[in-house]
Length: 187
Image (tube, rainbow, N blue to C red; front, side, top):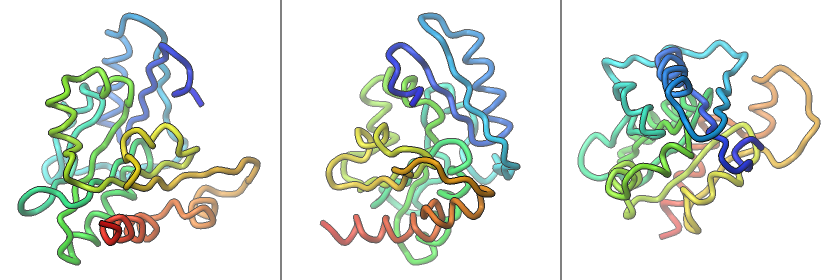
């Protein structure tokens, strides 16, 4: 819901490296409040030698894992704790021969302030897009378009350990893989 408030910059980092960058961005930010949205969950460390360098987090969104050869057919977009889920889905899709890309987007607001050329390099127009977030999907619609998909939660009031809630609501790598297959088949 913080993303709905005008002039609020929301930063939802995926790991310790993105959190350090988010803190730096928040300290340097001028022009409105910044909300650092951190998880209570224990997140895996993202191997920055294997995946994208954290410097792209300063642009709000960046390619974390790319398609192995050529342009991506599908882009998986996530922030915070769901980035690890997107990386897991990426491994499955790539194993099936799908040209998949993972974009970590810790801040939609900062990403949208980047030049159009940068935005297009991260989210190419020819690729289908699927976003995942353990919250309401509305803020991701502008990134996935009419032919994409968003996995999110559209109900309120459930209480349980996050692992159970993620499974119940489909915030899983399996659901993300299924959604990616679905958007790829729809063209």
